[in-house]
Amino acid sequence: MEKVKNIILTGGSKGLGLEITTCLLHSGYHVHVINRTLTAELKQLKNQYEDQLYIYLYDLTNVDGLTTFLKQNFPVKLTIGGFVNNAAIAYDDIITNLNLSQLESMYRINVFAPMMLTKFVLRNMLFNKYEGSIIHISSISVHTGYKGLSMYASTKGALEAFSKNTAREWGERGIRSNALIAGFMETGMSASLSDEQRNRIYNRTSLKKPTAKSSVSSTVEFLLSEKSSSITGQNIFVDNGTI
Ligand SMILES: NC(=O)c1ccc[n+]([C@@H]2O[C@H](COP(=O)([O-])OP(=O)(O)OC[C@H]3O[C@@H](n4cnc5c(N)ncnc54)[C@H](OP(=O)(O)O)[C@@H]3O)[C@@H](O)[C@H]2O)c1
Image (cartoon, rainbow, N blue to C red):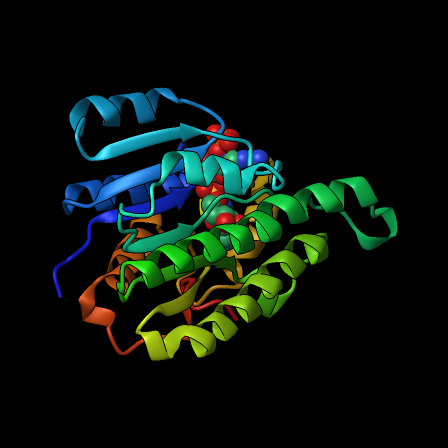
């Protein structure tokens, strides 16, 4: 099958998403990034890869407007070969402080918008008879547990279940879905942690250091490619061996 190059990726403006975008552009993919901010790094990438990078500024908390936005920007004849669900926020606090509106807002970005995007991407792949690949970026917090991350981890746990069941539901049409379980990475999301908190997290990994964004991005590229054609419905851990 001819390699379809259009990939939709959420949260390409910074952190891990920026790293994945750079990696995919370098490999020749056409990357359609959806996030709220046009960062200097994204502008620079646009100058470098003018014909491969497409930037859409959209706030994923607006789940109600998402289908209209997607239909306006992605005509059905533009075959989407892959979807990388990367955008997320971490509302962290202990459960006794749980605030419903903050929880709802996080669920909109981390769970509801990705589900609506998956629906749109699946329909596009089915229409174009394309055996595409979907990747949800999840978190090691689902599997190990960290104080203060129960609400955030629950959004990622929902995605892992959604991914496995997507794989089951659409596998017979050749569409794959996997969750990539990332360990702690040095990004804006983790910037507020103290050195002591960081060291405690590193000490829970076998390699005693932060997970490299480059290792995550090259695994995403692998999961999008034909090299992973027999891998679906899996949780792929890229986490320095967290225990
Ligand atoms: N950092 C870690 O240690 C870690 C560990 C495990 C898993 N993860 C996961 O890795 C992924 C990337 O996280 P990161 O660490 O790179 O975080 P980050 O640096 O905070 O970046 C988050 C990205 O999501 C986008 N985003 C946030 N809210 C959005 C909204 N309302 N609408 C549209 N886009 C929005 C941001 O873009 P704009 O601000 O421009 O909208 C940004 O591009 C996330 O799924 C996260 O849960 C992170």
